[in-house]
Amino acid sequence: MKTLIKSLAVAFSLALVTTLGSVAEAKPGHPANVASYKAGIYTTADGKLNIALDKQSGGAVDIRLKDTTGEVLYTHHIGKNDTKYRTRLNLSELPDGTYQVEITNGAETSSHMVNLSTQKPTTPSRVIALN
Image (cartoon, rainbow, N blue to C red):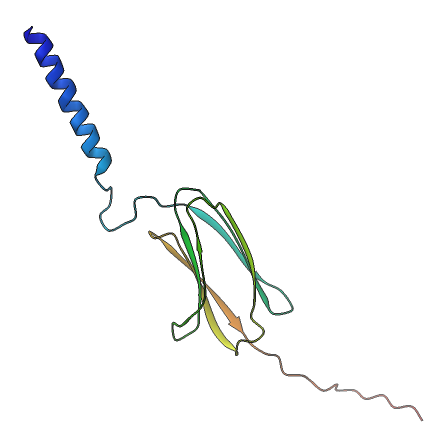
C-alpha cells in the first residue's frame, strides 16, 4: 500500500511539473508563437517594389514601408495561418529619397533599404543633320 501511495505521489508531482513547465513562457516579453520566414524584395524598371514572403504557420508577420521620418506609408499583417504573401507596390508617386521595408515576426526584425532617385534626361552629345 505504501508503494502505491508513493507511486501516485511521484506521478502526480511529475504531471504537475510538466503542466507548469508548458504554461510558463520561455522568454518573458517575447511572443509565444514566432514564425520563421524568408523574404525576397526586388525592384522593377518601371518603379515597382515586389515583396515575396514565405513563412511557417503558427505565428504572425508584419510588413511596413517607412520613409526617413519614420512615417508608415504601407503596412500589412500576415496572419498566423497564412504561409505565403506576394505584393507589388507602386513607388512611382513617392518623392526621391531613402525608404525602409521592415519585416518582423515579433521577436526579430529585418530591415531593407530602398533608394529612389530620378535620373535627369540627358541631351545627345552628337547631332546629325541632313541637307
